Length: 73
Image 1: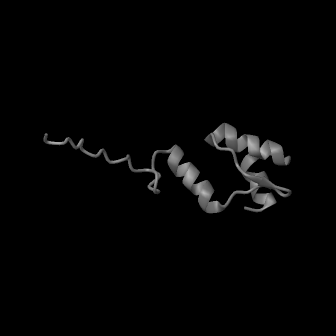
Image 2: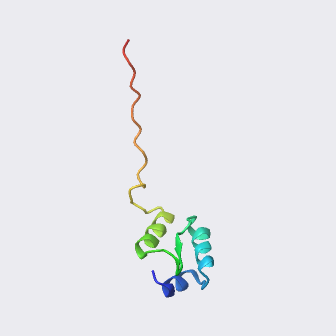
């Protein structure tokens, strides 16, 4: 996302305020560079989907429980 899109999304012009907005709304620490928070449109859409319980990414499925193996002695 470019600077204008981030300003429109967060309602903030300051880079650190934009990063705080992502922390407050999504609970994530967004990496930043000199231009501000590094956020792609896809990452933002994934954050929205996760917040709504609709995310189907790689970490969405619960871990499979493996059966306990015992030695037959």
